[in-house]
Image (tube, rainbow, N blue to C red; front, side):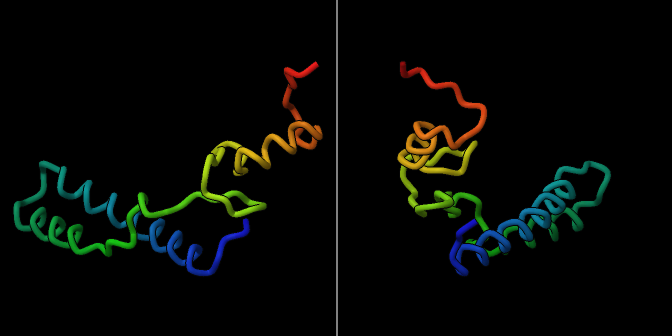
Length: 98
C-alpha cells in the first residue's frame, strides 16, 4: 500500500493500543476480580493516547491516495474502480453495460 510514513506510524499505534485496550476492557468486565484491580485497569485504559483511536485513521486509495468515495472491499477510490472495471482489469466483475 502507498501510505505515508506518518500514516503507517498511526496505524501501527492504533493496532498495538487496540490489543491493550481489549485486554483492559475484559479485565474491567470480569466479575470475579476485585475492585482495586478493576479500578487500576480502568485508569490505565483512560490514559491510552488519543492518537490511537480508530476513528482518526483515514482509508485511502492505493493508486491515487484519494480519501473520497473509497471502496473498502477493493481499496480503490470510485474513479479508479470504475476505470479498472471498464478496462476489465479487475477479475470477477460483471459489467452491466452492453
